[in-house]
Length: 234
Length: 292
Ligand SMILES: Nc1ncnc2c1ncn2[C@@H]1O[C@H](COP(=O)(O)OP(=O)(O)O)[C@@H](O)[C@H]1O
Ligand SMILES: [Mg+2]
Image 1 (cartoon, rainbow over the protein chains, first blue to last red):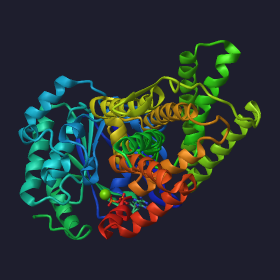
Image 2: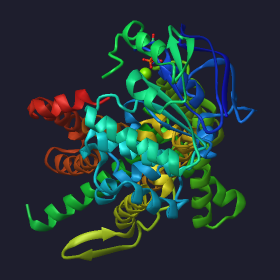
Image 3: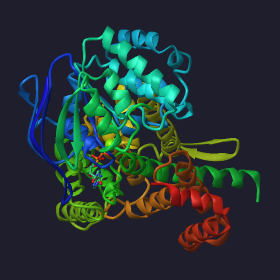
Image 4: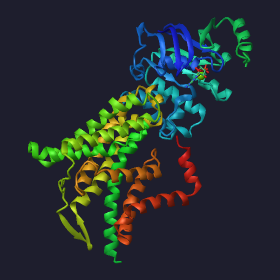
């Protein structure tokens, strides 16, 4: 589905990725885990075409390395829930969802609002009036309305209360069951991501340090404690 | 002073204020989507007036057609400035965009001087000879055209920005080009379209201004300066406040000229800025500073 091969990336003169190679197969949910500053978001930005990089990115075997950012998202191939939710605060809930669709797919909007009753009730409010959890729902709705074959989520649980995180993940599972999507999930929270992921990659210092099976409980627990400093049983 | 005089001064002020506002609209739109202070804006408008002015005698075109073509040329020039200059220069680093728009301004000035020779011309009167009085106040059709044009341009703009997909994309690019990109918005194309629209609106302003002053390569300068004064004092990433200040400047000038004479016009504008910045509550100034 999506393959990265020897991807390097730079912010100005400083290098952030040092040869990242991994792949996500169709229908899989793969998680990238790693501490702050490991390079997870940079991987998202490379796939999105937002940062200078070398190496190759393939979507369904097609080389998209030179494809401009907006085309990667316009074709309905990829949708992304950005780190920090990517809200346009001055715009309304609906505007935040339909942005970029140029008035197409009006029918899908109803369907998406069906999935998020909270948003239907507040659809013409400024999105900045919504809580963090509600904004994460807006971000999910914005992604889903595009019917992506690949959905990328960058730390969807960041800054949310545990109960709200559970809600976000429940919604994600529901969407995954309903729509045919491949998912790349970025998380610091190993405990959360291993519940939903088929496979995990550990990102460390701009490299893929290890590949892990979600059933490999022992390795994951020692990782959560040592490599990440996060309590794996939380 | 009689009520008639007061009304007359107010109308005169509204007309020049509307012209400042018309020049300012494009500056604000372009700043919003490209974060560029476009010093070439006035001269891009001048291109429209110059084209229209020379198309009539050389090609025997009707004035309305020539004006339309002039606006199209200004839109094209503004579009080209964005895709050929600004979009490339922006990648180099901040500050270069300022040099670039100053360069374009001087370039357009030089071309017009070369082609039109450094002479002055009398532009089409655009209704200035149609006069009437209403409630003791003197009007001419040219003045009314200015005020109506500003209202129509603002109305159209509100419609496009709030009711169309393109308008939504423009507002999204103004807030965050990067987030807009990840929703499939072609940010470069949106910017170029805004530059084109801004160029056309500058053309509208410059054509109306040309009908009131003598036409030469520099006639837009005082109008551009006042539009910038209103833009900077009101905030380049706001809309209502700078536009209100632009109209207010016109009114102020009109009254100052009446009481103190024409020489007081420019000092009055700058005294106002100093007064405004000195007297305004500090909250307003903090608000100005905190904006990105
Ligand atoms: N805009 C930027 N400019 C310069 N360096 C950056 C920028 N964004 C991230 N970095 C650097 O790149 C590295 C990877 O960051 P990031 O991909 O955000 O990590 P993560 O998402 O895993 O926390 C870090 O060292 C960070 O400091
Ligand atoms: Mg990150």
